[in-house]
Image (cartoon, rainbow, N blue to C red; front, side, top):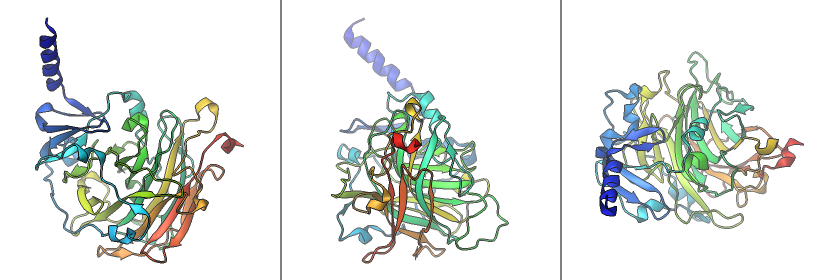
Length: 400
């Protein structure tokens, strides 16, 4: 066989094989266009009606809702006047997806499926105050986060920082905003009091997670569970999120966006908010509504949020039998302040009318004070919302 014939044969085979997306598949005929990003990402523009989440039995016969009944919360204008930047995603420099499609990042070839499947559980605890969190990968999830329980809320908005830190193999370091609701519906919510459980959860943020996301770049993700992470843990397009906008791709990086300690800071503006009418939870990125979780994804209704949490997490697999060196946030403690530590900026709750709810996240969870910490910086004097700084260096001395 000639070299040309072999190349053609390999091309035909590659077109016949489905493209694996985090353990699910996209059929070749469902891919309308493919974009190769300058950073090495491959973005498939997939028919919006053939996206992987629609294969979830919970979403059988689901009719896509293309726009929310309520506009996303406005946050970008709140960042003006500071050394904050909101960059665009790198892949957008290489092309765009046509109408009727959504961008889905192809799973990197180097990803080990066994390792990735052991590591997918991002938020695996049921009760609000659990501080010893075991991950499927036989590691401990270290947390430094603040949370507010002054709801009920119809969501939350904030600016999530973008920090690139080195992580140990098979570990992650992530920054996030999360909303949560209990399965127990008979409780009476009291402002300042934790709900009985937080089994319904949606989280959005930036994560450095090489074994799952492919490299050491901070990448955008959304995660949800409807049982506290016991059996349900859905990352990006795996099983629940229905994307409707072609502007942003989950699992991808933002270009030229590495925050510097004491220097320029880069953020992505996010909001998780409930639309008017049925309990559909939308995600907006930089004020663009990109998709949603339908109410059918949550067998136990997720009608309101009673626990809004923000901060950082690290997976510690105890390499060499000692605490990980993986850093959280910028690697600086939260007590170092907003210009040095990572910080969730301008957090606001969302009330049942869709408006801003000034809300101080005074509660916190810190699993190891020697390694990481969190500090509620309170309201900004010149901008709406509260800032929460968090993070730390990790290290062997954490075991002392």
